[in-house]
Length: 103
Image 1 (spheres, one colour):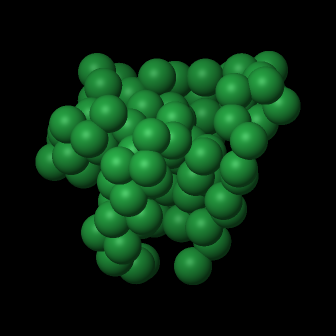
Image 2 (cartoon, rainbow, N blue to C red; image 1 turned 135 degrees about the vertical axis):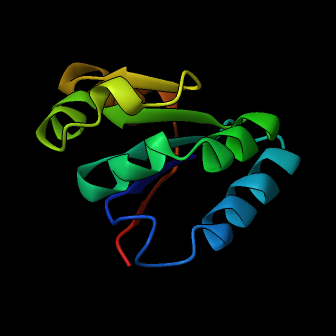
């Protein structure tokens, strides 16, 4: 399952997203979170990134969105910074389910 987040972590409770991801991992699904647009802010919140990593959930942030927000140097080491080609690969070959969380 690939969970794509586009909203700032300050607009909604990211805890519910973590719970969904954890349940999928418990069901032996491969789970990753892709942070795009304002959600890239979450890539700078170590507590959030640590919780995902502890639960074997991969975290990626879109490079152009991190750059546009001046976040590149602040992104957690637990987050992979990727481009559009890698995003397409995540969607097309890495994950069977895609969840876009926009609220």
